Image (cartoon, rainbow, N blue to C red; front, side, top):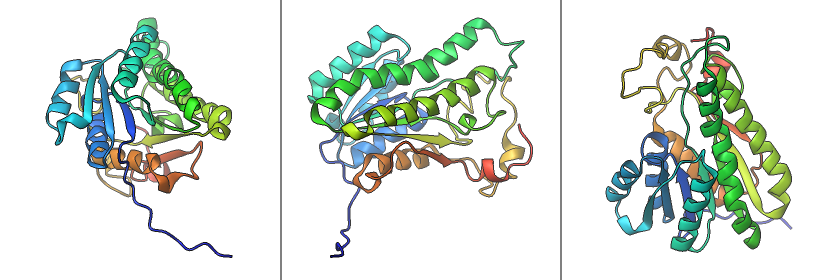
Length: 265
């Protein structure tokens, strides 16, 4: 017998979501999208003041909690997840979104400190956050983890040595978590943005170490930068019921950069 198709909405009423890097850019947009979809959101950021500003601008404000935490610190991560569980009682979705960019330097020029910092935030952070929430998800045989990777997970030139290595690692983490926990009810996927208008690509300090991406962006099919809200809506889709059969996937959202860009930046 053929099943009739039902119109499944992306409502996340009363689901509990943690978003890291929630104080700006893609994380801020994720918080807004998830709250609009009916979820309760823990807005986690190393800059607690920025996280509080994001929450204060929401309507309604009581659907979100701002938490300050350093995702590269095991102690800080465990304390933040404990605070989230105290506030909401469970964790349904984790968006490992926080990240930093490197200085686009090759291996013989990058400092050991910069290497360690990039790996700590971009790779160890998602691992620590995932490890901290998985026990609660396993207790209910249900959970969703969404890792923000990058087109630098597939190719060079989107960052320097440290960033590219870390983002390749995020895909490995995504796939191994899927292998280990998919059968146990935890669905894990990665989002791989291209050039997106955030504080990483347009730093407030006016850094001159980032290359000019505009000429290459104009050579892609989309011929424009991605907006943070577009990444957030993809995260919302992956967290919703329409994505229930999507496991271990790296979803590229780059305006065709990897397909058509002819010259690295």
